[in-house]
Image (tube, rainbow, N blue to C red; front, top):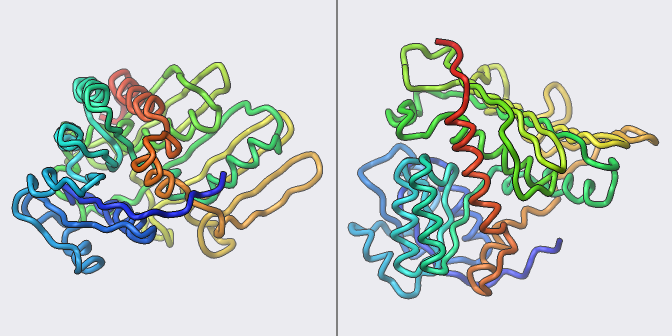
Length: 341
């Protein structure tokens, strides 16, 4: 799918508690967007980096200035996860569309309130799941769509992360704030599974979470896994906070897509002891084993999102899909077996 031509959009940011706000803002600016300002509570850790990257964006003392600015079309938020739903609902009631960092919410009650707000305001709520930042995923979806590996059977997604404890605020270790590992990090994997299998719905067959290495933080979960199933395929996902310091990247994220006539493996962030850079794709079929460098593949989400704001379309991601991902993530979190103390 071709990325639409960029058109100007005016946006603002409310809540700068996670570093993902850097990419969220930067991608829109690169497409010609204008950030009219930002508001955040206190002095969160990512604030200094945001100011260094975007010194021209003004900070406002009252978020209502941004919400009541009739020229602002889109609100971004990377607030503390448990606060994101309330910010999104307030923005939608003010007539703004919303792009939120993942997870978009942390409780079933919040998700229900978001559904009602979308219905009542006719605004949209979009969550920036991880595949939107990964060019290799774009290329893999194209190959699967072309039948390169036959009928899709299973996806296996691995989402390891480096803890970087010294950079983490206190809320990061509170389950009521971050929502649990399957809600927080696992939602990426659910989005990926639904997208590759073309599924509108799925069931959580099994799930488990654990704290094996951080017993001093009773609310923290450093390991999670789940098994998913839909009419279109099966999926397994593992997420964790164990990436060792010896790896030259924050996490060796991988995806294997198995088909009846071959398989694709993505090494998203690093090809360990192999090729430099990111976005590595390996395609294995009945003819050969091929390597595809996806560094030049498109990341169409942000341009499509701008088009959706201006044209009232759903090209970046359907609203139903966005809701379903978080619904399943919350279900997996709630039903997960507890391991590791």
